[in-house]
Length: 333
Image (cartoon, rainbow, N blue to C red; front, side):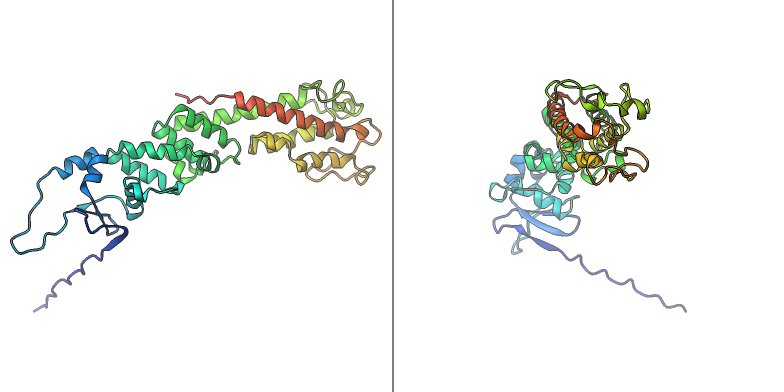
Protein backbone atom coordinates (compact mmCIF):
# COMPACT_ATOMS: atom_id res chain seq x y z
CA UNK A 1 0.00 0.00 0.00
CA UNK A 2 1.43 3.29 -1.04
CA UNK A 3 2.14 5.63 1.77
CA UNK A 4 0.73 9.12 1.70
CA UNK A 5 2.54 12.11 3.06
CA UNK A 6 0.70 14.82 4.86
CA UNK A 7 1.15 18.21 3.21
CA UNK A 8 3.91 20.28 4.75
CA UNK A 9 2.50 23.18 6.68
CA UNK A 10 3.51 26.54 5.22
CA UNK A 11 5.28 28.79 7.71
CA UNK A 12 3.33 31.90 8.54
CA UNK A 13 4.25 34.94 6.47
CA UNK A 14 6.89 36.94 8.26
CA UNK A 15 5.72 40.50 8.64
CA UNK A 16 7.68 43.63 9.44
CA UNK A 17 6.42 46.70 11.25
CA UNK A 18 7.12 50.01 9.56
CA UNK A 19 9.71 52.01 11.46
CA UNK A 20 7.99 55.30 10.62
CA UNK A 21 4.32 54.37 10.91
CA UNK A 22 3.93 52.35 14.12
CA UNK A 23 1.99 54.69 16.38
CA UNK A 24 0.66 53.30 19.66
CA UNK A 25 -2.51 55.34 19.10
CA UNK A 26 -3.14 53.87 15.64
CA UNK A 27 -6.52 52.34 14.93
CA UNK A 28 -5.86 50.71 11.56
CA UNK A 29 -3.15 48.56 9.97
CA UNK A 30 -2.30 48.82 6.29
CA UNK A 31 -0.45 45.72 5.11
CA UNK A 32 1.53 46.00 1.89
CA UNK A 33 2.05 43.16 -0.55
CA UNK A 34 5.65 42.78 0.64
CA UNK A 35 4.34 42.12 4.18
CA UNK A 36 5.10 45.40 5.93
CA UNK A 37 2.52 46.66 8.43
CA UNK A 38 1.77 50.37 8.72
CA UNK A 39 -0.14 51.36 11.86
CA UNK A 40 -2.01 54.51 10.97
CA UNK A 41 -4.95 56.67 12.01
CA UNK A 42 -8.23 56.33 10.20
CA UNK A 43 -9.12 59.99 10.44
CA UNK A 44 -5.95 60.93 8.52
CA UNK A 45 -6.90 58.56 5.70
CA UNK A 46 -10.56 59.56 5.74
CA UNK A 47 -9.71 63.26 5.47
CA UNK A 48 -7.46 62.61 2.47
CA UNK A 49 -9.31 59.90 0.56
CA UNK A 50 -12.93 59.27 -0.36
CA UNK A 51 -11.98 55.63 -0.96
CA UNK A 52 -10.81 55.22 2.64
CA UNK A 53 -13.78 57.24 3.85
CA UNK A 54 -16.10 54.63 2.39
CA UNK A 55 -13.93 51.75 3.56
CA UNK A 56 -13.71 52.98 7.13
CA UNK A 57 -17.45 53.58 7.37
CA UNK A 58 -18.09 49.83 7.16
CA UNK A 59 -18.83 48.10 10.49
CA UNK A 60 -15.80 46.40 12.05
CA UNK A 61 -15.84 43.06 13.90
CA UNK A 62 -15.54 43.31 17.66
CA UNK A 63 -13.47 41.08 19.91
CA UNK A 64 -15.17 38.59 22.16
CA UNK A 65 -15.32 39.36 25.86
CA UNK A 66 -11.90 39.05 27.46
CA UNK A 67 -10.02 39.01 24.15
CA UNK A 68 -7.63 41.72 23.06
CA UNK A 69 -9.02 43.88 20.28
CA UNK A 70 -6.67 43.62 17.29
CA UNK A 71 -6.36 46.47 14.84
CA UNK A 72 -8.32 45.92 11.63
CA UNK A 73 -6.02 45.06 8.73
CA UNK A 74 -6.43 46.35 5.18
CA UNK A 75 -4.47 44.51 2.51
CA UNK A 76 -2.85 46.97 0.11
CA UNK A 77 -1.74 46.35 -3.46
CA UNK A 78 1.26 48.67 -3.14
CA UNK A 79 4.71 47.84 -1.84
CA UNK A 80 6.18 49.32 1.33
CA UNK A 81 8.34 51.88 -0.51
CA UNK A 82 5.34 53.38 -2.26
CA UNK A 83 3.18 53.25 0.86
CA UNK A 84 5.83 54.97 2.98
CA UNK A 85 6.01 57.95 0.64
CA UNK A 86 2.25 58.11 0.17
CA UNK A 87 1.62 58.21 3.91
CA UNK A 88 4.42 60.71 4.52
CA UNK A 89 2.52 63.13 2.30
CA UNK A 90 -0.54 62.75 4.56
CA UNK A 91 1.19 63.37 7.90
CA UNK A 92 2.47 66.97 8.32
CA UNK A 93 5.18 65.94 10.79
CA UNK A 94 6.55 63.36 8.34
CA UNK A 95 6.29 65.36 5.14
CA UNK A 96 9.23 64.51 2.82
CA UNK A 97 11.53 67.22 1.50
CA UNK A 98 12.39 65.09 -1.52
CA UNK A 99 11.05 62.00 -3.28
CA UNK A 100 13.27 60.14 -5.71
CA UNK A 101 12.00 60.71 -9.23
CA UNK A 102 11.93 56.95 -9.87
CA UNK A 103 9.29 56.60 -7.12
CA UNK A 104 6.97 59.34 -8.37
CA UNK A 105 5.00 57.28 -10.93
CA UNK A 106 4.10 54.63 -8.31
CA UNK A 107 3.17 57.21 -5.67
CA UNK A 108 1.06 59.19 -8.13
CA UNK A 109 -0.65 56.01 -9.31
CA UNK A 110 -1.52 55.07 -5.73
CA UNK A 111 -2.73 58.58 -4.89
CA UNK A 112 -5.01 58.56 -7.92
CA UNK A 113 -6.24 55.03 -7.12
CA UNK A 114 -7.29 56.07 -3.60
CA UNK A 115 -8.75 59.38 -4.79
CA UNK A 116 -6.23 61.47 -2.86
CA UNK A 117 -6.52 64.72 -4.81
CA UNK A 118 -4.49 66.65 -2.25
CA UNK A 119 -1.55 64.26 -2.58
CA UNK A 120 -1.66 64.46 -6.37
CA UNK A 121 -1.56 68.26 -6.10
CA UNK A 122 1.37 68.11 -3.67
CA UNK A 123 3.32 65.93 -6.07
CA UNK A 124 2.56 68.36 -8.88
CA UNK A 125 4.15 71.09 -6.76
CA UNK A 126 7.19 68.85 -6.17
CA UNK A 127 7.65 68.56 -9.93
CA UNK A 128 7.76 72.35 -10.33
CA UNK A 129 10.90 72.60 -8.24
CA UNK A 130 14.06 73.46 -10.14
CA UNK A 131 15.90 70.35 -8.92
CA UNK A 132 13.28 68.15 -10.61
CA UNK A 133 12.77 70.20 -13.79
CA UNK A 134 16.47 70.75 -14.53
CA UNK A 135 17.75 67.30 -13.55
CA UNK A 136 14.79 65.17 -14.70
CA UNK A 137 12.97 67.14 -17.42
CA UNK A 138 11.72 64.10 -19.35
CA UNK A 139 10.21 62.53 -16.24
CA UNK A 140 8.60 65.83 -15.27
CA UNK A 141 7.29 66.29 -18.81
CA UNK A 142 5.77 62.80 -18.90
CA UNK A 143 4.11 63.05 -15.48
CA UNK A 144 2.86 66.59 -16.16
CA UNK A 145 1.18 65.31 -19.33
CA UNK A 146 -0.28 62.22 -17.64
CA UNK A 147 -1.71 64.03 -14.62
CA UNK A 148 -2.62 67.37 -16.22
CA UNK A 149 -0.28 69.45 -14.07
CA UNK A 150 -0.61 72.41 -16.41
CA UNK A 151 0.62 73.60 -19.79
CA UNK A 152 3.16 75.88 -18.10
CA UNK A 153 4.90 72.94 -16.40
CA UNK A 154 4.78 70.90 -19.60
CA UNK A 155 6.49 73.71 -21.52
CA UNK A 156 9.00 74.32 -18.74
CA UNK A 157 10.01 70.66 -18.81
CA UNK A 158 10.08 70.55 -22.62
CA UNK A 159 12.48 73.52 -22.68
CA UNK A 160 14.67 71.95 -20.00
CA UNK A 161 14.80 68.68 -21.97
CA UNK A 162 16.59 70.51 -24.80
CA UNK A 163 19.62 70.88 -22.56
CA UNK A 164 19.95 67.12 -22.09
CA UNK A 165 21.61 64.78 -24.55
CA UNK A 166 18.56 63.46 -26.36
CA UNK A 167 17.38 59.95 -25.42
CA UNK A 168 14.35 60.36 -27.69
CA UNK A 169 15.12 57.82 -30.43
CA UNK A 170 12.38 55.47 -29.20
CA UNK A 171 9.85 55.42 -26.38
CA UNK A 172 11.83 52.55 -24.89
CA UNK A 173 14.93 54.74 -24.62
CA UNK A 174 13.19 57.12 -22.22
CA UNK A 175 14.03 57.00 -18.49
CA UNK A 176 11.78 54.48 -16.68
CA UNK A 177 9.78 57.19 -14.89
CA UNK A 178 8.95 58.79 -18.26
CA UNK A 179 7.75 55.68 -20.06
CA UNK A 180 4.10 56.40 -19.37
CA UNK A 181 4.33 59.14 -21.98
CA UNK A 182 1.64 58.92 -24.66
CA UNK A 183 2.64 58.54 -28.30
CA UNK A 184 1.16 61.97 -29.07
CA UNK A 185 3.13 63.74 -26.33
CA UNK A 186 6.30 61.87 -27.33
CA UNK A 187 5.85 62.89 -30.97
CA UNK A 188 5.18 66.48 -29.90
CA UNK A 189 8.46 66.53 -27.98
CA UNK A 190 10.35 65.18 -31.00
CA UNK A 191 8.84 67.83 -33.27
CA UNK A 192 9.60 70.58 -30.75
CA UNK A 193 13.22 69.50 -30.41
CA UNK A 194 13.67 69.39 -34.17
CA UNK A 195 12.14 72.85 -34.62
CA UNK A 196 14.47 74.24 -31.99
CA UNK A 197 17.46 72.54 -33.63
CA UNK A 198 16.55 73.93 -37.04
CA UNK A 199 16.85 77.57 -35.98
CA UNK A 200 20.65 77.37 -36.00
CA UNK A 201 21.56 76.31 -39.55
CA UNK A 202 20.35 79.48 -41.34
CA UNK A 203 22.32 81.57 -38.86
CA UNK A 204 25.53 79.65 -39.51
CA UNK A 205 25.17 79.71 -43.30
CA UNK A 206 23.39 82.97 -44.17
CA UNK A 207 23.61 85.27 -41.19
CA UNK A 208 26.29 87.99 -41.57
CA UNK A 209 25.03 89.96 -38.60
CA UNK A 210 26.37 93.55 -38.58
CA UNK A 211 27.19 93.31 -34.88
CA UNK A 212 29.70 90.55 -35.55
CA UNK A 213 32.11 92.29 -37.87
CA UNK A 214 32.12 95.18 -40.29
CA UNK A 215 30.73 93.71 -43.48
CA UNK A 216 30.39 90.01 -44.21
CA UNK A 217 32.29 87.32 -42.29
CA UNK A 218 35.47 86.22 -43.98
CA UNK A 219 34.01 82.83 -44.92
CA UNK A 220 31.57 84.69 -47.20
CA UNK A 221 34.28 86.70 -48.97
CA UNK A 222 37.46 84.62 -49.00
CA UNK A 223 39.04 83.19 -52.14
CA UNK A 224 39.02 79.56 -51.02
CA UNK A 225 35.25 79.44 -50.75
CA UNK A 226 35.07 79.49 -54.56
CA UNK A 227 37.74 76.81 -54.90
CA UNK A 228 36.49 74.39 -52.25
CA UNK A 229 32.73 74.99 -52.16
CA UNK A 230 30.90 71.66 -52.27
CA UNK A 231 27.55 73.17 -53.22
CA UNK A 232 25.80 71.73 -50.17
CA UNK A 233 24.68 75.07 -48.77
CA UNK A 234 22.84 77.99 -50.34
CA UNK A 235 25.91 80.21 -49.98
CA UNK A 236 29.36 79.15 -51.25
CA UNK A 237 31.42 78.20 -48.20
CA UNK A 238 35.07 77.22 -47.86
CA UNK A 239 35.53 73.58 -46.91
CA UNK A 240 36.89 74.40 -43.46
CA UNK A 241 33.77 76.39 -42.60
CA UNK A 242 31.42 73.79 -44.13
CA UNK A 243 33.08 71.22 -41.86
CA UNK A 244 32.64 73.60 -38.95
CA UNK A 245 28.93 73.98 -39.72
CA UNK A 246 28.48 70.19 -39.75
CA UNK A 247 30.29 69.74 -36.44
CA UNK A 248 28.37 72.59 -34.86
CA UNK A 249 25.00 71.25 -36.01
CA UNK A 250 25.89 67.74 -34.78
CA UNK A 251 26.81 69.10 -31.34
CA UNK A 252 23.75 71.35 -31.21
CA UNK A 253 21.37 68.51 -32.11
CA UNK A 254 22.65 66.64 -29.05
CA UNK A 255 22.35 69.55 -26.61
CA UNK A 256 20.01 72.20 -28.00
CA UNK A 257 21.27 75.12 -25.97
CA UNK A 258 23.29 78.28 -26.47
CA UNK A 259 26.00 76.84 -24.21
CA UNK A 260 26.89 74.41 -27.01
CA UNK A 261 27.82 77.34 -29.24
CA UNK A 262 29.92 78.88 -26.49
CA UNK A 263 32.02 75.74 -26.08
CA UNK A 264 35.72 76.63 -26.47
CA UNK A 265 36.47 73.10 -27.67
CA UNK A 266 33.98 73.32 -30.52
CA UNK A 267 35.51 76.54 -31.83
CA UNK A 268 39.09 75.43 -31.18
CA UNK A 269 38.67 72.35 -33.36
CA UNK A 270 38.22 74.70 -36.30
CA UNK A 271 40.58 77.53 -35.37
CA UNK A 272 43.39 74.99 -34.88
CA UNK A 273 43.60 74.78 -38.66
CA UNK A 274 44.85 78.35 -38.81
CA UNK A 275 47.50 77.98 -36.12
CA UNK A 276 51.24 77.88 -36.90
CA UNK A 277 51.25 74.20 -35.89
CA UNK A 278 48.74 73.34 -38.59
CA UNK A 279 49.85 75.79 -41.26
CA UNK A 280 51.55 74.21 -44.23
CA UNK A 281 50.66 70.67 -43.20
CA UNK A 282 48.29 68.19 -44.73
CA UNK A 283 47.02 67.09 -41.33
CA UNK A 284 43.44 67.92 -40.58
CA UNK A 285 42.46 69.47 -37.29
CA UNK A 286 41.21 67.15 -34.55
CA UNK A 287 37.68 66.06 -35.39
CA UNK A 288 37.94 67.05 -39.09
CA UNK A 289 37.58 64.35 -41.70
CA UNK A 290 40.87 63.36 -43.31
CA UNK A 291 41.58 65.33 -46.44
CA UNK A 292 39.05 68.06 -45.67
CA UNK A 293 39.31 71.43 -44.01
CA UNK A 294 43.06 71.79 -44.46
CA UNK A 295 44.59 75.13 -43.51
CA UNK A 296 44.34 77.68 -46.33
CA UNK A 297 47.53 79.63 -45.61
CA UNK A 298 47.46 81.43 -48.93
CA UNK A 299 43.91 82.68 -48.38
CA UNK A 300 42.83 85.68 -46.34
CA UNK A 301 40.90 83.18 -44.16
CA UNK A 302 44.11 82.36 -42.35
CA UNK A 303 44.60 85.77 -40.80
CA UNK A 304 41.13 86.74 -39.62
CA UNK A 305 39.03 83.56 -39.45
CA UNK A 306 39.88 82.55 -35.84
CA UNK A 307 39.03 85.96 -34.41
CA UNK A 308 35.90 86.38 -36.51
CA UNK A 309 34.68 82.87 -35.69
CA UNK A 310 34.97 83.43 -31.93
CA UNK A 311 33.12 86.73 -32.15
CA UNK A 312 30.52 85.30 -34.54
CA UNK A 313 29.79 82.36 -32.22
CA UNK A 314 29.22 84.70 -29.28
CA UNK A 315 26.60 86.69 -31.17
CA UNK A 316 24.95 83.60 -32.66
CA UNK A 317 24.74 82.04 -29.18
CA UNK A 318 22.95 85.13 -27.85
CA UNK A 319 20.51 85.07 -30.76
CA UNK A 320 19.86 81.33 -30.35
CA UNK A 321 19.14 81.94 -26.67
CA UNK A 322 16.57 84.61 -27.57
CA UNK A 323 14.89 82.45 -30.19
CA UNK A 324 14.74 79.38 -27.95
CA UNK A 325 13.10 81.46 -25.24
CA UNK A 326 10.39 82.46 -27.72
CA UNK A 327 9.86 78.93 -29.05
CA UNK A 328 6.57 77.53 -27.71
CA UNK A 329 5.88 73.86 -27.12
CA UNK A 330 2.58 72.51 -28.39
CA UNK A 331 1.07 69.12 -27.67
CA UNK A 332 0.03 67.38 -30.88
CA UNK A 333 -3.23 65.54 -31.25
